[in-house]
Length: 231
Image 1 (cartoon, rainbow, N blue to C red):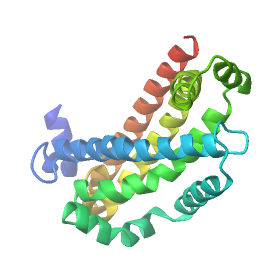
Image 2: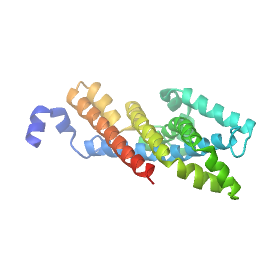
Image 3: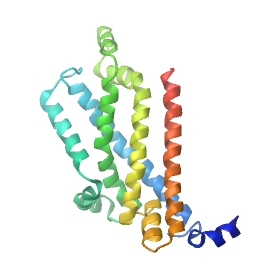
């Protein structure tokens, strides 16, 4: 197998597995950026999404001013192209990480770039929860936190998994874009090592690996969504 790769995919073979630009390193960096940004961006996005649902005029704690603030932050955040967001938040990235280059530095713009998208998805998912269940919980004396965790998040978990899957897939695409501007990962391998150095075999293998990541995320997300839709 290795002989076949060396003969037919010389660029792929020459990169090797380890080192600063090896395939194992690139895959690890892509996983690191995807999971890290999903964690931080997911927490912020979930908080904003819950806030939007709660402060809406039909929510459990209506607050027009707070809703408008949250809504505008999410809308503006979604409107800013990721490549511009990298530049805008580079001082913040430098302050937090101490660098604007590398996989760890990419977590800042990736998290800030994905949370508005996820927040809107969470808002839509939680808004689909039956108002009757919320009113019933309130009638039994449930507190706001009880309604959030035991009604909204529990009843909407299948839909939350679906929107989380969509967000994760979008995030993989953002990591590839971040890689193209020096963050590392498969994006750097595909664009910098493959495309810019005219190593088409490297570009295509890196692209296929990114697609495999997306297919795997979709498969796991669909499986979990089906499981929790019956519980």
